[in-house]
Structures are given as C-alpha cells and as structure tokens.
Image (cartoon, rainbow, N blue to C red):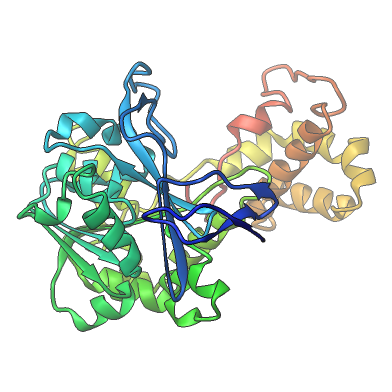
Amino acid sequence: MRLGYQPVGREFPVFRILYTKGGFESRPLYERWNSYSRVQVSGNPDELKAPYARALSPTFPPERRVRELRVDIDVNASTSLLGYRGDLNEVDFLKYDVTNIGHYLRPNGDTLVIGTGGGRDVLAALIFGARSVTGVEINKQILDTVNGRFGEFGGHLDRDPRVRFVNVEARSHLARSSDHYDFLQISLIDTWAATAAGAFVLSENSVYTVEAWRIFLERLTDGGVLSVSRWYSESQPAEIYRLVSLAFSLPNEWKLRGGWNKYIVREAMKGVIAEPVRTRRDKMGFPTPSGEWWGKEWYEPMMDLLGSRTLRESGAIDVEGARLDLQQYAAGRVDAAGRLFRLAEFGTWLHSSQGSLLDARRVEHTGRVSESALVTAAQPARGDRA
C-alpha cells in the first residue's frame, strides 16, 4: 500500500491511498473508514449501463440498462448500489439473476436478507412482492453510506414501510429473535474487513457453519426456504464443495419434508404425474432387472470390458476377481450386482476419459447391446435404487 498527497477536498483526507493490492486506485466518489473497514463508492450516477449480475438467465433482454454505482469494502469485496426512484420496473432485471431464483418458490412472503450491502437483495425481495423485508447488515458504515450519503440515489429503502434495516451480526440476531420468515437469503456475503483488522468475531465466516444453519432453518416458517449462494469455478470449485458438504452435514430431519425424499422433484411433478405416484412415501426408486442384464444381455459385453487393455493396465481393478464375480452371479451363486454395476460405470468412464470407448471400437453382439451401451443404459442393480 502506498500513500500519496492529494489536495484537500470536502469528503477526502489530506492523504489518500494511491496503490492497493498491486494496482493504482482511481479516486472514488466517496470514501469512509471505520475501525474495521474502508468503504468506497465509485461510478457515474447518471450513466446508464448493463447491470452487474452474478449470472443472468438467457432470457434476459441484453439491451436493458440501469443506473448503478459500485460499493467496495476493503477494495476487493464489492456490492451494487442501484439507482431506484420507487419504480421497481427500473430494477426488475434482478428477476433474471440466479441468486434470486429462490424467490420464485416463495414469493410474497416475509423475507430476511443477511448482508444487505448496497440493497440489491432487498430490492429483489420487493420485486417478488415481499410483505416485509428485514435487512441485517454487520457494517454500520455501509448502512450510513447507502441510506445516508447515497440514500436519494438508492431510493431510500430505509423509508419504505415494508423494509427494516438492522445493524447487527446476523447469527446472533436470529438466535435471540423469535420472528420467522418465509424466505431467508444469503448471497455471496464475505469480506476481508474484520479479518484484516484482527477482529475475527465480526467476520461473516460464522455464517457458514452447521450451528448457524440450524438457527437459520429454525427461523423459517413451515414451507420456508433458505437460499445460500456462493461462487463457482470449474478450476477451483472448493466453495461449492464446502457449501454442499455443509448442507449434507445437517441432521436428517432438516433434509426431508413430511417423511418424503426428493421433495423438490416431487413438488415440480405436481400436475405432471398421478398424485398417488407423486406422493407415495414408501417409494424410494424403481427396481431394475439386473439378473437379466448381468446374467444374459450384458454378460459378454462385460467380459470384453474386463478383458480390455485399458482396464487391465490401470491397476485399479482386480480383473480376475471381477470375472469370477460375473461368472458366479450369472450362475446364481452370489449377488454381486452392485459391484458389477460400479465396475461397469468405472470401466466405461476410464475408456471414455482416454478418448476411446472399449479399445476404440464399438463391438456389437448379435441380439445383445453393445459394450458402449454400458455407458448410458446401465442402471443400479438389484438391491440398489435409481
């Protein structure tokens, strides 16, 4: 970090930071510090431009333009401050943003937003007809900036009778509160503000724990939705892995609904399939004719797979043991259907990943499926469920 001398201005100190995190920093519209963060606002409040969005639907009209400023917390953590004059049509592009997809499941309810930032998620809730919106923001400087200095630009959401802002840490607030919500949104909230100052107690990291999620889920109404968004990168998918792992770490009672599994799939099938089928609680899947597959149609293709050079040279499979399993299963002496299915899945993946399928040939068996069909046609075996 490098300091430089700048002429004194009404809203800037005598000394200003010129270089941050490896680059020159242009002068912002506004800058304020508190004991644990530095908040800046930059951009042209009169310029119409394509909206900043995390991921927009392909149906989004590309010609849409909005007024938008950027709010930065400690340089790298940013949020949008949208120009808003009270007409939600000005900002209805938020309906196309993937982080707001949960609102389609639970519109028109009571919403809580954790990490309000520039007010983007608060506006999204209003667009979807929320009865009330509670915005929880840990950083008072952000609230003062958005609702104070730039309140007119952002439409003074703090004056909307449906909206209430709370300057508090979200997890502790919900632990003390008895209020319940139809929709609870956590969209990409993370900064280096508190950690940089050493004040880890103020960091949003405490939001991403099993204990915190239990509190969030307990504050939902019956049928309420918890929506959590994180960044995804193919080369570095760790954030999504962590998020999924966290969700699966919750007790089973949080992952089922009314004794049903596949709750979201079942809801999506309303009016598509017969109600007795859709609502069967003892239905865990469909049995598969594994005896016919491994004992007859797929016996020879599986033998060819086990004899392939790629599988033998991989060293990952006990080929002779697998052959014995297949022979014994075909003779009805052992139930190895599950092992054989996983082996077929692995073997065909191994061939495909090396640019060939079953030694670069598609061997057809008269009256039977080809080995390549194992890639797409194999199903969980007897005792397993689809």
